[in-house]
Image (cartoon, rainbow, N blue to C red):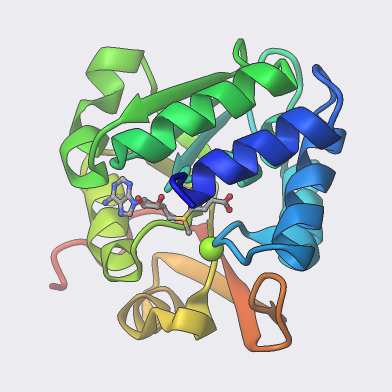
Amino acid sequence: TGSTRPQRILRAVQKNSTRGSPCSVVNAIDDYCKHKEWAMNVGDEKGIIVDDVVLELKPITVLELGTYCAYSTVRIANLLPPEAKLITLEFNAESAAIAREIITWAGLEEKIQLIIGASGDWIPRLKEEFGIETFDLVFLDHWKDRYLPDTKLLEKCGLLKPGAVLLADNVICPGTPDYLDYVRNSPRYKSKFYRSHLEYTQEEDGLEHSVFLGMAGRGAE
Ligand code: SAM
Ligand code: MG
């Protein structure tokens, strides 16, 4: 077809949503990915769970790991208070370029800082380069074998404060067994599972919601 899936998603946004209306952007992407071409957005069903977590927590600082086309980025940023900031990390430059266009189309560029780079390289630099103290919410949705090492890196860098929430997508499909084992058994977290389905399918999937309690048990590993 001579184009990439992110480019086709951007075209669907430009054609079927209203500039400056984040909800219409989210709806246009869901519609395209349900009826034309599956894509790895958190999607409409799990998206409602994400919305509820954001609305209840009212985070001021949010970190997203894995932007792709900025579906979840737009969905989350639209629910944040005006003073809040969302930093999103994406290491695929082509996806990041599309994400930037979609964020601008949605009118949310003031609230969102999109960083092109790998989570493992950038997490240790966030305090210095972006003046972040801690994050209130981290949405983990990048490659599944990175959830656990990046969580430990966030802890080590002092980026989590007690009460911070880690919300992890796809913990069943494709699955993140080492991460689930960690957050469910570590004294540093209180963790619960939200049962749902893989985006745009009936496959079982879900989100894991883990409240960071503090560095109790430090040195135990
Ligand atoms: N959160 C997005 C949404 O729901 O709309 C979907 C993100 S998609 C499932 C995962 C993305 O993470 C891919 O675009 C991939 O390039 C990116 N990614 C994977 N590992 C990464 C890493 N270690 N650092 C930065 N980006 C990463
Ligand atoms: Mg996902």
